[in-house]
Structure formats: C-alpha cells, structure tokens
Image 1 (cartoon, one colour):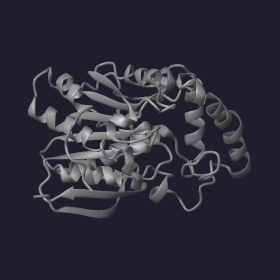
Image 2 (tube, rainbow, N blue to C red):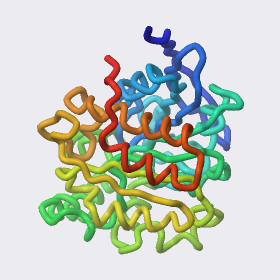
Image 3 (cartoon, one colour):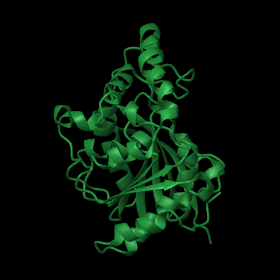
Length: 311
C-alpha cells in the first residue's frame, strides 16, 4: 500500500534572515529526510517528481529556491547582492536544518543537481548529512566540458553574459542562457571560477571557512554520457575537492533509465523516470549496511536500482 503523501509550500529564513521559498513533500511517517538542491537557474518545481518518488519510498523531502531564483527572487533583480557562496553558507545551510526537522532523530541526506553538489562544504552544518547523492555535478571549468560544448560556454562567459550585465545589471531569464534570471554576483563569481582549472577549489582558502576537506560521508555522482557540461573529467575534478570522502562516479547511458536523451537536466523529466528511485535506493542500502564497505557496495548497486518509479 502506498504511503499517504503530503505537499505544502513554505517560507523559511536563510542564515541571514533572507526569506526563501520551499516545498515539503513527505509521507506521514518518514524514515529519513532529504534536502534536494537545484542546479543553477533551475526552479525547485523541476524536482517535484523526484521528491514524490522519494516520499513514496519513505523519505521526507524539502525543495527550495536559492536567493535570487524563482520563488526566492527579489522584486527588483538589478542591484540585488548574491553569490554562489551565499547559496551554500546562507541558503543551503538553513535548508539543511529545515529538512532535518522533517524527520527528527532520523538520518539526513542530500540530493543535489549540478551546483547543488558544490555547496556541501560551504555550509557550517555540512558534516551533518549521512550521505550525499549528486546528479550531473561537475566543475564548471570551461576546459573540462565536452569539446562540442566549448563554443557555447565561451560565448556565454565572454559575450552574452557581459552584454546582459551591461544592459540590465543581471542575467535575464531565457534567451541564450535559457534558465531563470541570475543575480550579477552569481554570474561574476561563477565566471571567475570557470576560468580556473581547479574551479572554486583553487580559491578555497580565500573564500573563507569551509569543510570540503572534512566531509567523510559517502558521495555518489550520477552523470550521463550525453551530458556535455558535466563530462567525466568535470565530475572527477569536482569529487576530488571532497578529499576526505569516499566518492563514486557513475556514468550512465540514457537508455539505462529508459530515456532517449538526458543531457544536463533531463534526469528530472518524465522520460528519465527510471532514474528517480536510484538515489533513494542508495540511501536505503546505506541505512541497511552501516559497515565501512557499505557505501562502496551500495554505490555499485545504485546504477541498477529496480524500485518502481512513483507517478
């Protein structure tokens, strides 16, 4: 019998009091909590189906928009101050506390898409989760993308983005960017990192307190062979920043999840619903196998998780 699932819209304070928009999707008696963090420029609603899958498997899920994005955007974007690091230190950290409150005393996990897999070490509570599932996450260094994507990346960084900032003071939604509107500071910090081979890893000491070298919880990165942004190299480079964690990279063919194509964000669309149970099945495996080899064994099984996708 499927559990009764509840959905509710919420607003909650970031670490500095800024109001964030969120959605809770949870069963009556969750066995654990999962914080689902978006990719850059993607609204939390993209991940609603994924969260429903998690809830159907017993997980209380929290979706949220970072400051400047979607339901957490200001009325006037021009002049709005925000950087990617703020998303980690102020927004992700507060959302992690809010997610933990959905299942007190139960395990806490994270599931992050793209930049959602970058924020863990910037949070002051980044050591709290028991494991991290990340999806299509790699560094944004321009030279690590697949060769076919390089002209698009360089056009965005060197032509389109600077032109948008000059004309509007931010990156407008849609257009050649394609995502939701981005604050100036987010684009500028992201672009600076994009021209460093080590991405934000080259600036960690300058960026202030972090726990990237202290996170020991296992991390599994699901990537797809047709994702030209999160290439194998980019994903490996990102995982290398988490020096104390046991990490695993899975490179799936779209057909393995029943999709013709997945790319950088198609994993959360109906065509790829065969993927949705995989991170939650990995969490299940970890909770059942607490020995030191558990994360490795569970990750090996994660790419072939057979749980039925939720509607």
